[in-house]
Length: 180
Image (cartoon, rainbow, N blue to C red):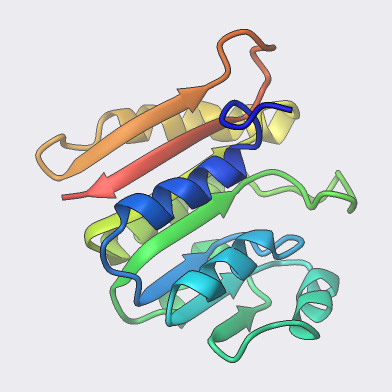
């Protein structure tokens, strides 16, 4: 197993932990099995975690920390639930590992959420987007999200793209957006 060239979620955790100065409020835009929420709850004072699948929310509530608010709703509605600046937003797009692969994030809602998330992100804040392109919806997310992020003004945002060079073109990618 590789230490660096492995799980893009672990890489995103490292980037957040090492490079983010303020660790007050975070959003996990895709709760899933809760690994990113666990990381965020151990790192930030307050965490909002979104998930459309009630079973995933119910499963996580049993182990959640006091600083985590679980929201059983779509991440594209994050501004309806979060009315304060956030230091970090994590996206792990795709489907719930071990769940129904027919239930995925959708390019329209992911795109809306990312745009609105960038508005909520505080100065110096970081957004990470793990994008899985091995299924049809993931390819659509890639086709709509990457061009948008590539056009963000460099005077306000730094955007870095991490990909596997010697793997399939469908391998996952990690995009990190830092707000100036």
